[in-house]
Amino acid sequence: MSQNQWIQWLQGNGSHPYRLGSKAGWFAYVEAPKRDPLDRLDVPALRALDAEALEDYNECRMVWNSNIPTVRTQQLEHAFSLIEQVMASNRRDGDRLKGGVAIDSPPGLGKTTIAASYGKTFHRAQIRRYGPKTTNGSQRIPVAYVSLTANTTLKALNSRIVEFYGHPALNRVTAAKLTSLAVDMVVGCETQVIIVDDLHFVDFNHRTGTEISNHLKWLANELPVTFIYTGVGLAEKSFFSEGLYGESAALAQTARRTTVCPIQPFNLTTDAGAQAWTALLHLLEGSLNLASIRDGMLVDHASLIYERTQGHIASLASLIERCAHLAIATGEETISEKILSMAVTDSAASNGYALR
Image (cartoon, rainbow, N blue to C red; front, side):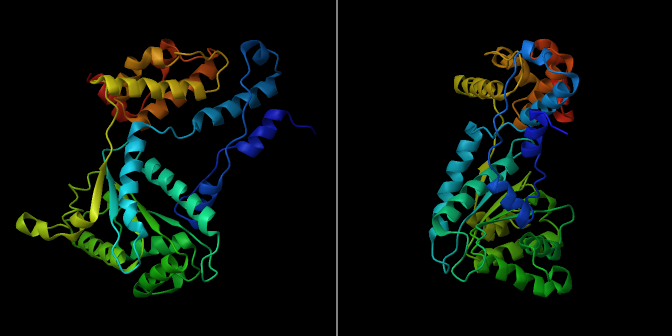
C-alpha cells in the first residue's frame, strides 16, 4: 500500500523522545540532524488535498510548529558569553580547580534550554577536534547531563551520574562504591562538563543538602570538569552559602567557585528591550508553517503577546504553539487577534495577564 509524502515525512521527522539524563538520549539529542524541510502549501493547495492527505499534512505541520529551532535570544547570547568566560578555566591542567556556573532564575526563562544548548555545542566541538574515542580507547563523552528530582539524596545524586553513563553495575554496588564508579566513568570518558539540572530540588539548609553540597565540592576538586547548574532560587536555597549564615557564610567555598548567570524575562521598558522582543517575534513568525502566513503576523500584536506572556520565553513558546494549532484547526491559517484570544496560556502567564 503506497503512502503519501506527508506520512513519509512524519516517519523521518516525527517528535524525538529524547531523555537527556541518559548517554543514549544525550547522544541522540546532540547528533540529531535538522528536520527535512516541510513544504508550506497555500490555501488552494490545501483544498486540493484529499481528506487523509490533509489530515497527515496537518500532523506534519503540528510537529513542525511545535519544534521551532532554538532562537539565539539576547538572554541565550548573554548566558553563552558568561559560560564561555567561566569555561576558560576548563583548559587548566587537571591539578588545578575549575570554576562553575549556576544559571539561577525564576521558572519559564529557558534555563534548561540554555544549559542543554551550550552542552550540545561544546559536545560537538570536542568530538570534532578529538574524535569519538579517548586516549584509553573508551567512548568520549564530553558532557554528562544529570537531572535531579524531589528529595534528592547523596546516593541518588551519585546514582544519577552513574545511570547517565549506563554502567551495568549501577544496581549491584554499595552507596560508597557508587561514588568511585561515578568518578571512574567521568575520568575514563574524558567528560569535561557536567550539567546538573533542577538543583533547586535540594534544600541546602538541611542536613541532606549539606551532604550534597560537600559532595559537589569534593567532585569539583576530584574531577577535571566544569559544573553547570540550573535552578530556581538557588540563593534562597542557600546553595552559594552552603547553609551557613552571618559571618560563617563568607567562608563558603561554593560562592567563590561558582559564577551566577541570571536570566531575565524580556521587557518593553527600553527601546533595546522592545526591539529585541520584536526581533524574536519576527523570527518566530517566519518559522511557522501556516498557509496564510504574513510578515507582521506576530509583530503586529507584540504588545498583546507580551501582556499574555509577561516576556517569559516558555510562556511565549506555548502561546505561539497553541495559536498555530488553532490557526490550522479552525482553518484561519494565520495568527490574528481572534486566534490569540482563543489560545490559553499556562497558569502563571494567565494570572499575570489578569493582574495587568
